[in-house]
Image (tube, rainbow, N blue to C red; front, top):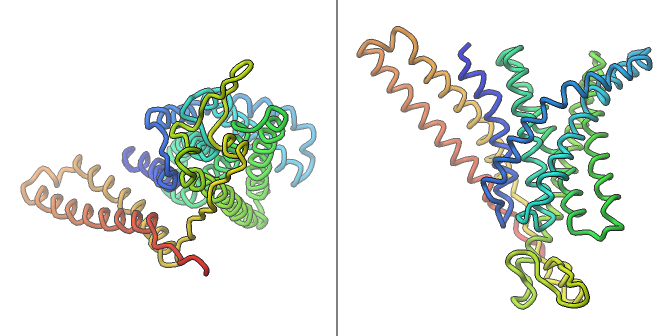
Length: 343
């Protein structure tokens, strides 16, 4: 099968999930920083692989049964090294950037780094096992990486603006929860038994927990944006002059003045919006892969004739039409409609 098709099948699911996370941020992050974070997430595959081999080798003496063997491979060979290096991207690189100025940013950057890793990992798996594995991972492993990144990023975002006394606990909680959920997901799969189906339950927990944390941080962002003009600081920080000159975030200023912003909660999507979002995402993935198949057909002999080129043009135009329809459906699901607020 064409390298173009296999590569696209590995990349498209990650891009759609990134779009879902990015589109919900009302104060979008710099594109250049997001791209660099995505690439760093992919590049950590290089140190993750040898680290995983070393950790798994250290755990082999304890792998004496079905579950202990699966646990060694799941946690030492996958979850711990992968989540640790994703955490390092956030804490050593993104943490220092001025654009990281509110808790919700941690979610966006956490998902971005995780999807960068998932994309390269997907390319490696798809190159070895083919399109069937790509489709299975698009529905399981890629969302799993994305939402463990969301969970970790939510705690890193809180820690960025927390007091020094609270910071370590928040960072440890983010890394610990992401690692535990990732390891539990892999644990059931690596038993190679019927227990593997339980990994879907872990994936559901990851998605629901990640969405809950994201909604809470998004609510705080909306509250900050709705704050009185004299309290809202567009760049997220202001200088408080005094002994030693201290810098505090806009949210910290609001707490200090005891004038919280009005409660603002974005209504949840309606069931119809969720159906559009899911069908649009699946359809856009399928139509994008089909377009890659169509473009790969340019190398076939039948396209060298006039009739072949005309046929190829008709198929391409029809495929583009379907792709645009599913793109519209996906964007429509992202935007709403939203459920009416309770009175």
